[in-house]
Amino acid sequence: MTTTAEQMRAWRGPAILSFGFRPFFLGAALWAALAMALWIFALSGAYVLPTAFDPVSWHAHEFLFGYLSAVIAGFLLTAVPNWTGQLPIVGWPLGGLFALWVIGRAVVLCSAGLPPVAVAAADLAMPLALTGFLAREIITGRNWRNLIVLVMLAAFTIANAVFHWEAASGAYAAEGYGLRTGLAATLMMIAIIGGRIVPSFTRNWLVRQGPGRLPVPPMQRFDKIALLALLAALGLWVAAPDMQATAALLLVAGALHLARLARWAGDRTGAEPLLWILHIGYLFLPLGAVTLAASILVPGLFGGAAAQHLWMAGAAGTMTLAVMTRATLGHTGQKLTAGKGTLGLYLALMTAVLARLAAGLWPDQAAQLHMLSALAWIAAFSGFAMVFGPAILRRRVRD
Image (spheres, one colour):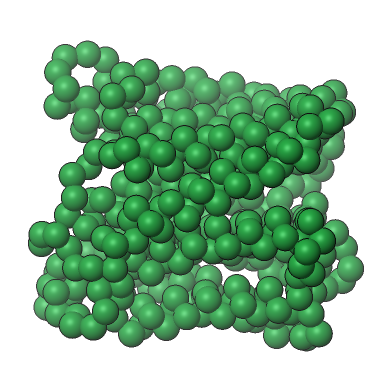
């Protein structure tokens, strides 16, 4: 067996363990919906979360380090074999890695009374194993171009450890260094990986549509300047989130990434939701930077949490849902076009993001808008499980 396809065909167990995206994308979607439902019950007082974290910190942790870690794992376990030429993880080793993620979710949820070190160890087991696998593949395959992905994953994992330390020490981890560092690492992943795939996918589709403006090729000098500006702005935001200098750098980074996005011909993708959702997802990155800068310069204008949700639910939530839908279609042998069900998922997620932002603008209506946002979020991710779950659970339509 010398190819990815041969390795997957050799597996005769459950189809869900034949490729990395299958268990992790489905698990991520189900957990995103379930965790939000638990959050609604906790807010209403109908349910007390059995976690050692305060409720808001648990909510933030389980999106950033729970849901997102699964999506990152599914994406990297699917992409890395293509990047490095190495064979993928399939079968029971893949099942074991997924089981570590499930154990992490259960232990964090039921962590009240458990030793904080044990909770952190259970939660960090999967991302540490994933980081080790990625390091081995990149080094063995001498794929130095993607070493930056390993650095970002390591930063994301360290941020999770810091979050646990802050929570165990009695700090309000939902506004701590761990969360900001993890979110900053996530945004850099979106900027770097999204900066490759969005213009590339857009170009491939537009070439088939006929003459017209095409995206500028990725990773030109302008892109590198924009990435450095974003890294500087996020670094200062992690260290000093309320400084006016932070706001200034966020504004610069936001402007540069708006210009970067404009170079990718997103205005020509209206006929294909699989493409325009990628552009909208990336758009939330600079919009979040500008909105967060405005909330620093004019306190109370949006509310820092509402502005930050443009990054978390907007950029991270939208880009991950876009990648999950496209990758699942492609790797299960289906046509790369969005049907009505997929379009419905995208519209539900847009409703969730905009309703959450509106809650910061109109605090008198915040309770109703929070509920609308949560229900739309649940619809988007439970909808992914219903629309794409059957394809994830069966063998490819074609090899």
